Length: 98
Image 1: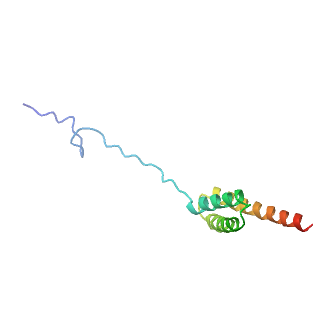
Image 2: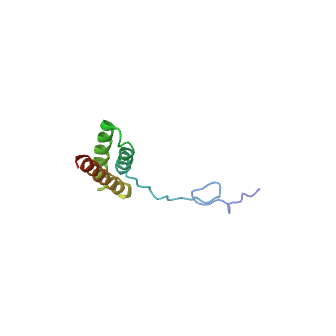
Image 3: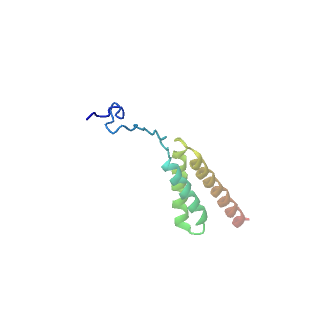
């Protein structure tokens, strides 16, 4: 009996094709995301005195560090939310002192 050698390819004894899939590496900015989440939670819980300050400061710091890494989107959003929190805080203090 003769063997059928037409179906075998070099490197693959089963005769099939070798498929290599190159998937792009998804880059994420964990510090920027953490800063965004903490700033957002700090803004939501602005009525809780101590927790508010802790969340806001951590959100501000993490967002600021995350701005220097790519992707920057959520880090910039966290920084903006932290700045909005500062504006709200000064408006409340100004209204109470007036």
